[in-house]
Amino acid sequence: MYATNDSFARITDIVHDFLFVEINSTALQNKTFEYKIISQEEKLIRKGHFEGPMVQLRLSLMHEGKYTFQLYLNGEQLQNSGFEKRAGFSNYSLSLNNE
Image (tube, rainbow, N blue to C red; front, top):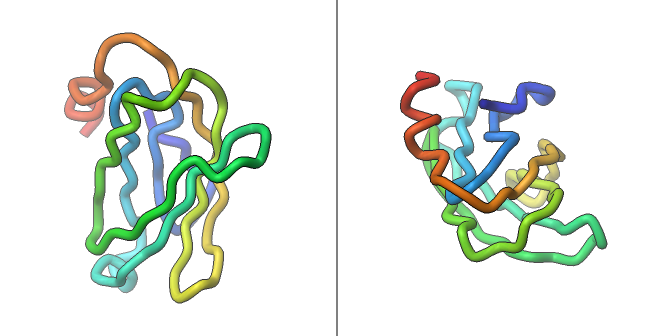
């Protein structure tokens, strides 16, 4: 299951263990992106960077709840998407079945 409300990337909208991020634009796929994960209380939970068309972020240690994924390129915010972190089984097999 992906949230498709933004044009730059698709992200999984329900997360158990992994958040999958897929860059939509082929022109942007080899760039280095920065990201932030923000809680509902607007607290920075995690930040980092990745390069390439797809990345999986392990979020299994995060608490259940609603979060925001922010995607940046060269310091400019490209995307702001919500997702829900749930406890339980891994969504890795769900991701493979949706391809």
